[in-house]
Structure formats: C-alpha cells, structure tokens
Amino acid sequence: MWKWEAENAKGVIVMVHGAAEHHGRYKWLIEMWRGEGYHVIMGDLPGQGTTSRRDRGHIDKFDVYIEAVEEWYKEALSYQLPIVLLGHSMGGLTVIRTMQEKQLKINCMILSSPCLGISEQTTPSIFLDLASRVLNKITPSLRIATGLTPSMATRNKEVIELDSNDSLYVTKVSVRWFRELIHATVLALINIKKVPDVPVLFMQGGDDQIVDKRKGKEWFDQLDVTDKTYKEWHGLYHEIFNEPEREQVFDYAKRFVETQLSINVK
Image 1: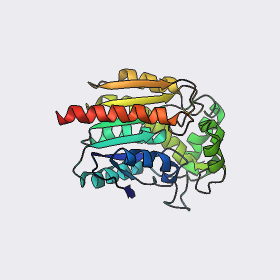
Image 2 (image 1 turned 120 degrees about the vertical axis):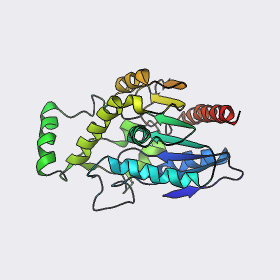
Image 3 (image 1 turned 45 degrees about the vertical axis):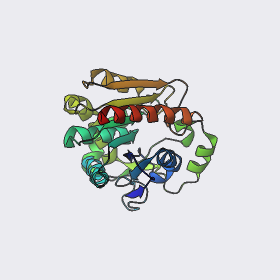
Image 4 (image 1 turned 90 degrees about the vertical axis):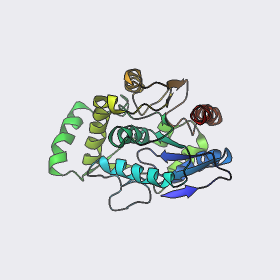
C-alpha cells in the first residue's frame, strides 16, 4: 500500500480502485484530497497493478480483495482521524462486501459507479456464461479478454491516451476471476441488511457503458441506512472521477464528506 499525507489533516480517505486498473491512475484524485486536507491510503488489489505479473487478472477468491481493504483500513486507524472509504466500480463492490463482512468503523463511504451488475454491452452471451461455469471447475486460471477499451470508461482524451499505453492495465482476466465477481454482486444484494448504518454517497455515471446502473439503483433503493444520497451524473461515462467534469464530481464528494465530518464532530 501507499500513503500520501496532508498537512493538518482532518481525515483519511481509503481508496479502492476498480477492475483492470491500479493506484497510479488516481494521481489527480489523490492530490485533490490531499489539497483539501486529507491523508490518502491506497494500494493495488491482488492480481492487479504492481502486485503480481504471474497472477495478473486472476484471484482464487473475492475475499482476498476484502482482506486487502481491511489491511489498508487498519493502517488508516493509526492516524486516529475520521475515515472515509471510497471505492470505484469493482472497488465500490469491494467496499460494500468489506463493510458487510467486516463491519468496519468508518465515518462514511463513497461509491463511484459501483459494479453491482454488468452492462448489456459487456455482459457475455448465454453460451459464454455457461461455458465459464464449466471452465471454472476445469481450468479456473484460463484467461479471457475483457473486451473493455479505455474509451468505454471515459470521454477524457488525455486519460484514454494514457490508458492505451499503460503496461499495467489488465486486458485479460481468468475464468475464476469472472465467476467470483459475479458471485460477489449476488452476495452484495443478498447481504444488503448487513451494511452497517453509516452515511453513503452513491454516485453513478449516467451514460455508463460498463456497469448496469439499473442494478446499482435497485441496490441503493433497498439499502437501509439513516443517511444515503444517490447522485446520477447525466452524460458522464463510467469513470466519473476521470471525466471532463471531474472537478464538479470531486466538489460534490468533498461537500458530502465535510458535511458528515461536521455532523460527527457535533
């Protein structure tokens, strides 16, 4: 994991990246939080980024993601400051599953286009879905192309160019990884009542081509917490913190966090 510290910090943001990516893609967001007085803790999830070339795009169990986030959270505790969990896409799903299983003591969480279902554009055919169930038992480490492209995630041309030349960007995932992801989305809904009563900001790109925003909204509507906010950014693609309008998105998230921290201080 890595830590970026701010002067006179008022809180800690623990960030969790999405599928196929890594912490290096969050430089802008990290600096934005630091500039507002927040320490940031982040790492690369197992099988992603710099963690392992041999296992890149593969996991045996989704639980390894939960264990990684719990480790980052424990590091955040050492600052003795309010803690915010922020997860994007699969990272959002990981945050949800972590909170369901570990009941971490945090001040609030932010979900950025969380993966609670895959969009029709990226959902495999019925044949491939059935095939993956069989292959998961026979050759779980078999890699398959994700079919995702940088231009599906964002309209930001600068980010698209960087991603197109990023050697850490995962383009193939294992059959086991795919099945574990699908299983985790099912568990996120089944165990929705296990989400502790902490404030939740759920932000969704209106023109998301990667996750099924309808599934996300259905999950949000069933979420039973005292304070929850749903914000759909019309016209934005999946990576709302990378879109041309990202400063507006960040300001919205920052105001949410500041509101929650002021409430907790009282």
